[in-house]
Length: 134
Image (cartoon, rainbow, N blue to C red; front, side, top):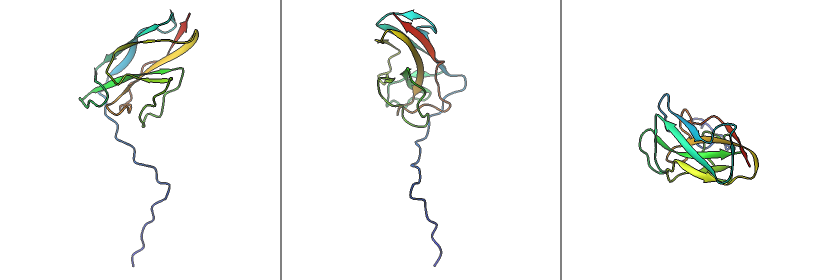
C-alpha cells in the first residue's frame, strides 16, 4: 500500500480571496481635518478617488464601502472588518455620517471594504487623523 500523506489537524482555514483595487486608488477624509477641534455631532465626510462606492453585497468592479475605525488599530486585512463601536460599517454605501464622540482626543481612520467587508488588495485606507472633541 502507498503511504498516505497526513494533513495537519490544525490546518488554517482557506482565506477568502481579496478583491483587487486599482493602482492609485485612495480613500481620505474630506472633513474633519487632522488636528481639528470639533463638537458633537461630528460630521464626517468620506473621500474616494479611483474607485466607486457601492453597498455591501454589490460586486461592481473597483467598488467598495466605507468603514471608520475609531480609537483603534487596523484589523486583520485578510478577514472581514469587525463590526463594533470602534469599527463602524457603512454597508449602505453612504459617503458621510455624524458621529457622537466623548469629549477629548480621538483617532479616526477610514478603511474600504469589498462586497464581503474584506479590505481590498492592496488595502485602501486613509491616514489616521486625530480630532479633539469639545
